[in-house]
Structure formats: C-alpha cells, structure tokens
Image 1 (cartoon, rainbow, N blue to C red):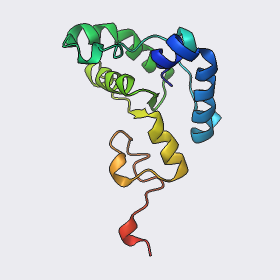
Image 2: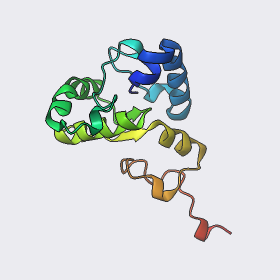
Image 3: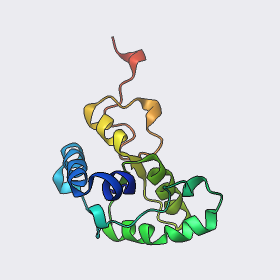
Image 4: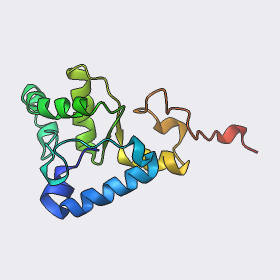
Length: 142
C-alpha cells in the first residue's frame, strides 16, 4: 500500500493511513497484505506528486522514484496498491522503467473488485490472476 504524501504526510497523518489499511485488508484479507518499510507518515515519496509527474523532467523524476521502486520490490508483494492517481501513474512507470513489472492498481479498483462491481472494461491494471474475478457480463445475465 502506497501512502500518498498529500493525504497522509501532509494532511491527516497515520490515522488515515490506518484507515486505508483497514479497508485494504478487508478487501484482500489481512494474510495477503504486505506493508512497506518504512510506512505511513514515514513512507518514501514516489516522486509523482506536486506536479512533478507533469513537469517534463522525466529522467529526474524516475531517478527520484528509484528508492520507491526498491522499497516495493523488497516487499515481494504481487501488487502495489496506490491511493492517488499521481502515485499510480508514477509507480506504474517506475515498475516498467526499473524492470519490476509488478502490477500497480488504484485503491478504488480493489474496493470495486471486492464489492463485485468492477466492470470488465476497468481491469487494465489487474494481473491475469484477477482479471476475471467477479466479472459481470450484462449481455449474458437474464
């Protein structure tokens, strides 16, 4: 679970980080949750926020994000869950750039998947192991 800088470190602190973990664990099961170290208010920034993602300094942004990529790889987790769009875009690019090729999913994707309401066209970032979970095909339902 990536702790987004804006809502965790800059705003609501560890309390919201705990709330995010509660929701993710409820969706994926506590036994499937692997936390990064350090985490919560001390988690490393991914390097995509604050306008950096759109700044045009791609090589600098990717170099800044190297520590985040290493941190994610160290977990051995199958997925990285990102709670913010900038984090998602940056971490996805880090995964490709540094050869991790770990799937990065939006937090809302995991919530919708768990609720059974994730549409078949909303599964772009899921790995093959989850692409067909709870798929509802309205054309075949009657």
